[in-house]
Image 1 (tube, rainbow, N blue to C red):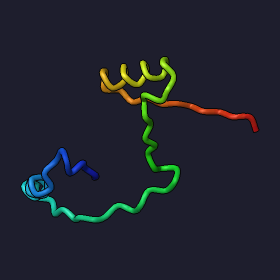
Image 2: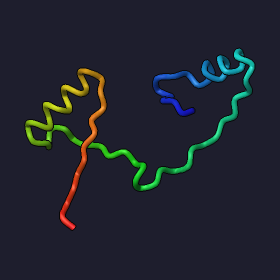
Image 3: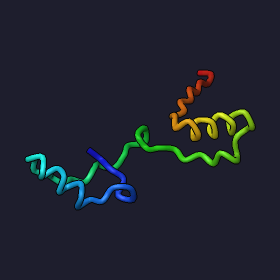
Length: 72
């Protein structure tokens, strides 16, 4: 399980796991491969239609999946 330490208190999470009679084990995740790394996009640099798409997705708390193809 992974978590965002800015949103979840690590000690509280560990305490909760122990209260459920489990023994937590902390491990460091392996570094992401190139295909797993998340891309960061500056929405302001996108065409208007894509800006609207991302803003609507953020408002509705929905992911955006883009499928790119190229000749070859």
